[in-house]
Image (cartoon, one colour):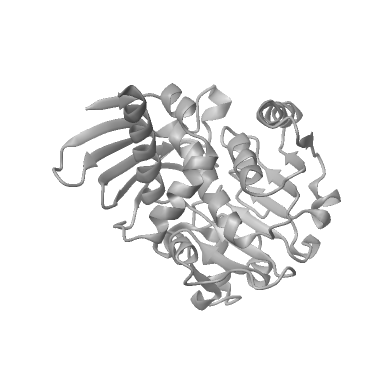
Length: 318
């Protein structure tokens, strides 16, 4: 069995190949049982520690991802999320590879958001407001910039130093884009085409009244029933697509809270990413609609991304 480390994942993947691979996989038949999320008791009451197990399969490969999410880790100099993806051959059942899932998670999460954006945001979207300065933040910005003609990126976070660091990481990859720290996102949000939220926030990051017509909103940071990155009014006014209804309706406060409040019904969700990729649902029918994609993470995206790394490495080694 091959062991694929984080450095190999980083040197192998790029969004121009990963996004199409995910699009193809979500358009075809696949298996993906509900992922299992287990809360882990912690002395840090303000943080939600989690252990998760995510299985999925395609025509070529079987796989399972296991990860931990410890939001309090950065203050101790540790990473928030640690993960591994185990791949098996679909035909023989033999183990193929163990792939570093921590780096893979950054790539696949951003690529899934970019895939959804490519089908939901306006094609002429030029500005991006990114909430979050964690390890995933640069990937999110670069992924969106890979599928839309982004010219301006605003980075908002709680610490000026982390905002500056995130900006620099993005500029190193895309020096052609104007990337700046943004301490007051409310000053720019009304002119933003795409809003991306990748935070550990428990309460809404922005007010729905500030949203401009035609905005696309991408929510990836929260997977807890009692937390959310946007308010109920934002969900109500948006055309909503989710990565997995089964998982979102079990985990995501962004949807569960307005459902409980009676602000929306389950039918407010237009469909899943797989239906979007297969042209079974249409999220945007005109340029003034506000669209929203809620992602909590899917095993299929992990397995497909890991398999892509495996195939590229083994092809290159031949």
